[in-house]
Image (cartoon, rainbow, N blue to C red; front, side, top):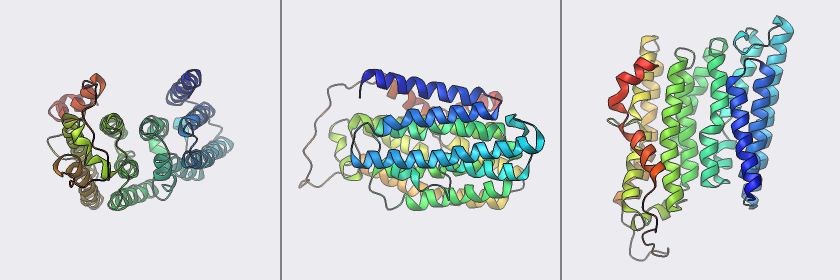
Length: 346
């Protein structure tokens, strides 16, 4: 990809995200979402592979439909109340439409079909952007309008997302698809708590982004795309593979790693809100996710491939030090002891 084109798309992504997260007016928020959508499409389709082109078209169609619903929702609200403010969404139809639109943007069940396919058609770095940066503006809109959302619809979609994210990830062999279903599952956790404690949703999103960035950057360094190659990547970078295992276990939410913190706080908050049944169900559903994270961790570190492997034997890569991976890997594993300080700041 041309360096100037890459610079323009990166700056546009930054601009679109900044406009959306800093706006109070619906039209400005919508403009930021559109800039984001148009900026990421060249990054998805840059390999010119048919699957990448298909992923770009799917992404564009879904995001365009979701943006139309956002605009439609805000227009109906402005028509009835005269308010274009993000925090003043009061009309019931507008609230329902906005919940649906943001669910499409994020990839919540039942609007999740596009997300695994788009991630599978993208490179690992673009998949990282789609899983983290591109989720930030819709999460911000949810945060700003959390008091207006439809609680029944959102809770139903959240539990369905946690169920399907765990269930569909079980029989996948492509790592990008596994991480896509992992993302859907985590979004279920974020959505269920947004109405009761919006700041906790943001904290969950930040920690999820940190752990996902660690996993994607390690996979990008070792050039690993599927389970059959993750088993022999230990010959290339043994320490990096051990770090990958810990990052995956952190994503699964096992104590004493960072990923345990948001799940623990969400279950605690749901119990305080007298949603014990929802808390129990979503905690049980996290076991599905735990299974495929353990499977990935097992393949990456514990399993040795048979001698008659079809893959070319790999050796250590030249560059053994990678400071960004070292920093975010440390954060994605060691933040749990700092939880009292994090809770005070939240």
